[in-house]
Amino acid sequence: MVYADANCLLRFILNDNQEMADYTESLLNTQEVYLLHEVLCEMVYVLNNVYKTTRKEINTILSALIEYVIINDSDVMKKALQFYADTTLDFVDCILLAYFKNNKIQIATFDKKLKNKLK
Image (cartoon, rainbow, N blue to C red; front, side, top):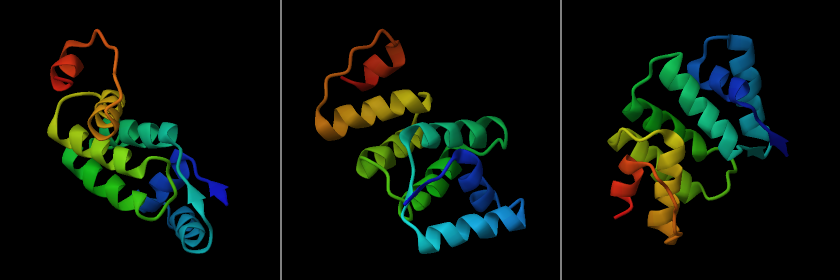
């Protein structure tokens, strides 16, 4: 079992450092790799703000990655990525929206955009 950080997984996704990408691929093929929600959020941020990856591409890339790692509430995280692709909400708000839609969890917010999606 190993917890991967954003850098490790991004090197694999971006394949911009062959040695690091190969190392991460080896981990994914030989270990149970855990992905924390916080790390997923960091990956969304870096892909969007540093690499200028579109929201739809981020959804595609990270939804595929979720199939190869262990992440709590994977169905919620996939739905959050889909909301991220389809809205202008920030990713954390998309996670809250996904918990609301999937699990009927009440969300308290003053954020008008999120509040409109919770109706």
